[in-house]
Length: 293
Image (tube, rainbow, N blue to C red; front, side, top):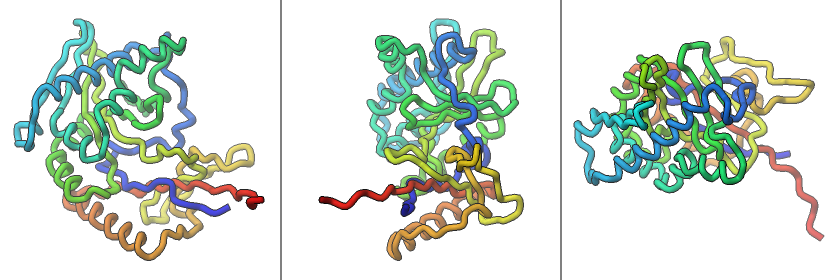
């Protein structure tokens, strides 16, 4: 079989964009009766209401106040949903070519109602916990988006970098940095259950299956992982630099563009003293097709 790159992206600031090495190990639907069922309902409802609130105000040019803007939405008195810099993230989604209808179809409350009509009492997929209190890692049902909980330092870092991140996205439409689409908090009335999370695109979401994936840092120290399960390569495990024993042929022109963009993205990360990032590469194997008759 031949191999083609299905997706590649440089991980953005620190742990804010880091994924577990094997997300499938935690895959499970968040269905009725799950301990996070109430949480994901209010996440969906909050995203739906927050988008409507943001669209009620037309902002042609972002100002400093737009990055500092915080909107709190009461969810029936039981939960509070907080939307950070809503117009800045709306601007980012538009830069990324994400339509409001598409975003809501993936994350909004109407998906839950549609699922209920079809007899499917589930919303998001896959919870991966880090062992930290109030932490989670969710995937939208259609696989387009990932929702990652943040700690206080990660939250503050993303808010601080946001104006520069937006400027970089405007200048670099082909940037390989993780694409952040929203930053929110959802909390219950008691305040004991409070979750800060970021919404980002799933860079390995593709109509083509990902048969191999690699997390590459440009280092060989402790950069290998056992990705074999039951004698077969587990495609859900991100392998590392020492496991990457191949060449990807993209042609001279695409190679030049790719290396130039990686250099631009790395310079942006370096300008903010961020050194913990990597390149995530997904490989799809093209199966040989029978000759036409």
